[in-house]
Length: 220
Length: 220
DNA sequence: ACGAAACTTTGATGAGTGTCCAAATTTCGC
DNA sequence: GCGAAATTTGGACACTCATCAAAGTTTCGT
Image (tube, rainbow over all chains, first blue to last red; front, side, top):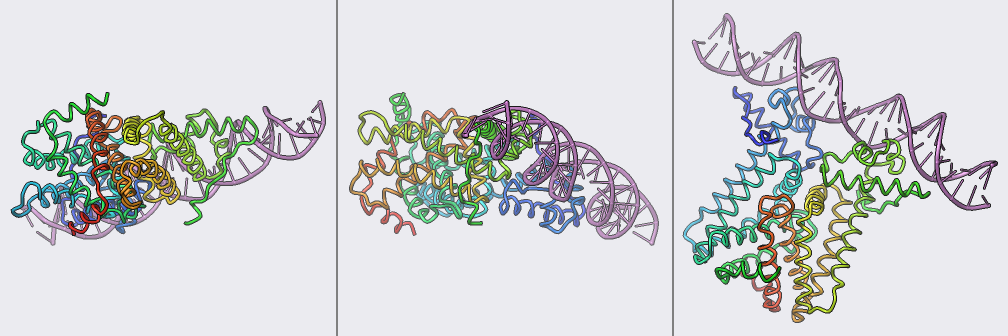
């Protein structure tokens, strides 16, 4: 149960092999996004990339291994995208946080992200490996947001910054099933993005040390 | 494709039959929550409620039919819970909105809701019937929230009220994969609930007609 | 260009799936 | 209680699934 979270190693030694592995991973991601976890089958993956079932099974002897390598690949990809978006030219911390919010919400509108993350959230319910990788990814997201929150409002404690980061991140991710790709209220995304970009920054700026504790205490 | 959204009729005529159908639906929900959509199998449902496969198959000749009746059952259940929570004693509109927020976030922490809705969001990606029922449910949630938003800030247009309701609802639902049952930051839920209960109401009160349009325009 | 190792093909295996059916049993209006 | 209809049983069907092994083919260091 615990060892299901250890990292697998990516197969493919000869150049032909690595090309095949690339094709398999690409096809696997496509199946997951286009057809969902239900259809995520060695056979369907093989068909999608024009390979034989036995061949896919040779490179990934266990299906779980394909899932794990694929997920690592996906997450690395998203983390790179995140790193890249953060490395923006001279901007104020406020503008940087605004930019991160806009980029996140924009990305959520892509078919890839909308489908992928809803599937991952569901799979994380009963798969420790996926749960851990998803957690680790969002921990990085919270760190990025938290860095700007701290700079915008240096008076806040680390815990308060963390809480605010989670709140902002969760609020954004929550748009996925409602305002994401092909979702019922997708047309409202520009307005929601505008509200988010403006109001989350106001929230960060106006929050005072002790406010969260006071609010939490009052609510009980 | 379009007709997959038409409602099925619940089987069971004799009392014994209805009892069996009840047992099947209860078992089906349990399997979905405890083991996930991947394990949602006629055979597993039958085993869970101690019935024979053929018997389940008699009452629900097609698996899709079981899914549809189950989903209608679930959604009706949630809508009743929502109605009940709204019908609270003499409170101000502000307190009512606060209460709805607290109740929603509290419910999200239950294993049932955390697991169920993450599964439904994923299934909605490729199943029109599920997508439509989920949409219809959240439309009702938005209506409830919107009613109080409108009363708290009567100056807002219907569209602005709708946008704010979606924003509040999406923000709350976004806590599911991160702060829900058994999720990594579940311990932060009290603080997030406190921030939400206070801040969303401030947002509603301070929003002025035209603000959303102005923010949206400025962002582009 | 030899040969070991990597890759691919082919076919088979056993478990699991949804669906169906005929016969046995139970229910309930009359 | 009779009897038709509803329910339950047990088994069967044709699939798809992940996995495997043995035999071919290709690659690439030497």
